[in-house]
Picture (cartoon, rainbow, N blue to C red):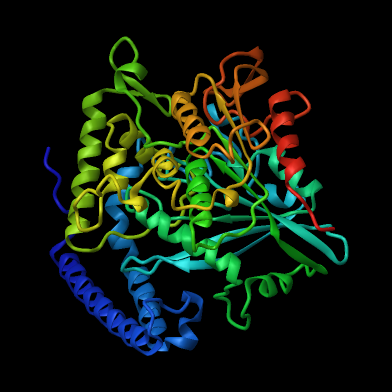
Length: 501
């Protein structure tokens, strides 16, 4: 079956006009930045949050682009929505985990979980995308409700997982209870930036936004009206508390695909001439450190089918769905109309991660350039975590890379432990002065769980004790008093995550 564009003739005409406006806007932006560069004598642009002051014409263009994108969002994304609404609308529910239903019953949290855990949630923007739609990139900030007067709060950066195709910084189900509890005990704030998701986005889109996040954090940028610094804006939010943020004591945590995002941010930060922010320590939880790739034959049952969301699919079914995704992506790319997606609450978008990984097309999507050619192997912006660490050791300040703890399930079907083992070998080989011992690099292969929970189709929860079935995403609801590996990991991190109070 051949994919055909789903839009009506009138919609196609509207999209053609949108494409023309986008091209004109980009030409105007290039002219404005060219003039600014000529005046300043440099090849740098004002920080994006300062465009309304230093480049008001550019800021107006961005605002118009964002409005145009919002006006055409439903039209542009309806085919993408159809493709990720799979296997069914019931199984593509943004709240299927909150609280968990059926096989996800062990996710027993409500969408008020942050509040239940004693945190107030705030959101602001830290940048907007370089894409035609100038999509706002939000950051979620969680602040404990009981901070002492005058407290200097250390910071945790959290990078969410989801195979780079789903997930969000404000999605409660994929935080670990241990991380939230430890942050609260430390009286720390949590900062969780969203980043561009695929299949719309690529590695370079993610890298550009993570670089912007580092600069926004360091320079105290702010997009909020009436505030010039994000810290000052946060201090004014209700409930108002008398505290300050200790920006120099940062702990970084990345989960699954967020592990690769965390590594990308760490290496961008440590780049010579980069932000070079002081970071105390990092924790990677079963990281997707390499291109996401899963072998069909290894995962298939005796009938050659793979189970996804409790339903078994043939390879032909999945290949057809992937072909449709590719055809749609290529059509949107050819018209410069690929939208930017900053977040999706799972299970929306999970189908993309599954389909692209088991068809082994994930790498093509994230290494493609938006004008079609695949990135060259030496282009840093298109590298996975292993490639980045392996090829940039001369470009980074090793002393700016933090101590790192990594744990990974021994039988992970999603992110092979062999990739993480390779990453650890690269760190020890290419960064020997930094990562030559357990003091600065600890790798724990989790082989057993004291209590393993899983959901049944009827919504009941099954418990296994002393289970050696340790795969992927196994720690969200675990109790650290029962699991030694969790205590070891968070104690190790906690010893290195400093405070000024």
